[in-house]
Image (cartoon, rainbow, N blue to C red; front, side):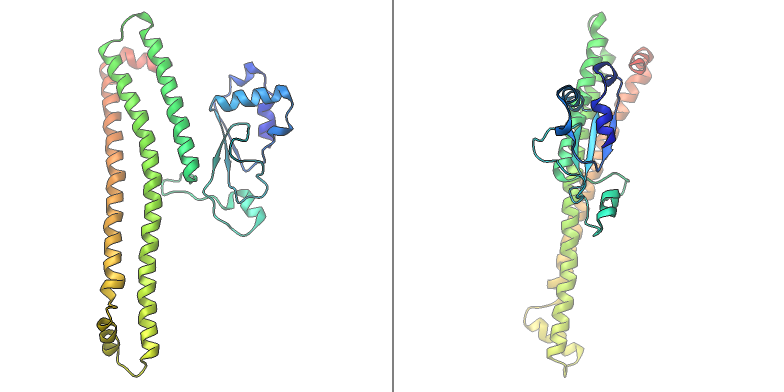
Length: 266
């Protein structure tokens, strides 16, 4: 909360010096600001330099919703209920992916990807203007700009694909758990009803009724396992494309040291 007030009390000149601000689990204080503070807050949000990470299960982080003005861009966290108000507020519900990145909701990921792409393309446009100030772009400069734009756009697609794959992976794994539980329950119910039968006879009776382990458990699990493999292929394909584009960018810069110098200078 103090971070929001600190930003809102900056001057326009001071605001330009902010390269990034990241706030977590704070209530939205925008409506408590005066007119001048709101102008600064709006400019800060429009700059895409500030992010407010919010777990909607936290009762303290109030005042956020669709189209509500804020001091920075709000990214909703894919939080879990930890059953404790204090722990929920102190990031207890935060979840992280295998790479240590904070998990966001589907809408949060989409918003973050859109902001990163917009900022990346805006910065690239500035660089293009700077490089072309002295005349036509060189071949190396054109290649660098084209590859950089591809890197930004594919990166956005990769973020969206990752979200989709994570959601499907969770769904497939749940289906596999359900298949195992269904077979276990089916087998258990049959054993309790036919307690005088041997294990072989129980399995045979279930099979006669069309309830086999292969049909209820093994085949569904095998089908979902195959689909999980496809998801891994999609993720790897995006990684390969990103690496190829990055390699192309590196090659351009290695061949054109003057261009590399200009980019390093910003």
